[in-house]
Image (cartoon, rainbow, N blue to C red):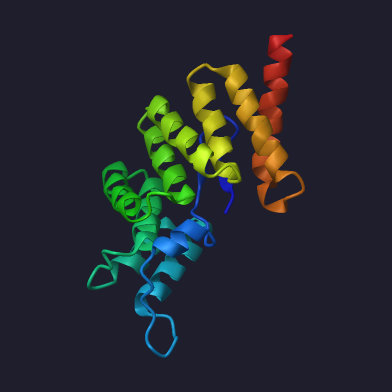
Length: 197
C-alpha cells in the first residue's frame, strides 16, 4: 500500500501492504483444516482494512480482541505496531514492530514502519540506516525510497533526498495509488531546484 502524505512538510507514513511476499511467508498460517480463514486471519484483515481507512483505534480493537495473542504471526505484530504508530503511541509501537522484525526480518513493510518509528522519535540517522538496508534487499518498494528521501531531507542531505525522491517518482510513474505522494514530491523537488538555482 502506498505511503500517505499528511502534508508536504510532514513525514511520509505508510500502512502495511497486504501483498508483501516476505510478510506472507513469515506469518504462521492459522487457517482451519477446512481451508476457512481463522479468527486470527479475520482479525488481521479487519485491522488492515481499518488501517487503510485511517481508523487506527478500530484496528487495535480488532487485534486486541484476540485471545490468546498469536505470538508467531508477524502480520499481527505489524498491524498492531502500525496502528500504535499512527496514534503516536511510540512505546507500544516499538514493542510490536520489534516482534514483527524478529518473525519477519526481511519484510519491507516492517522495515518501513520501523524507519517511520525512528523518524517519529527524531532519529532520522537510524531511520535512514534501516531504509538503506531495506533498499538493498527490496529495490522495488517505493515506500523505502520515499521515506529515505524524507530522512535525508531532515538530515540536510538535499542532493541525496532529491535522488531518492526521483527513484520514488520513477518507480511510481503511472500508478494511481501514489498520486498524492507524487504531487508532494514534485512540489518539494520544484522548491529544491528553484532554491539551488
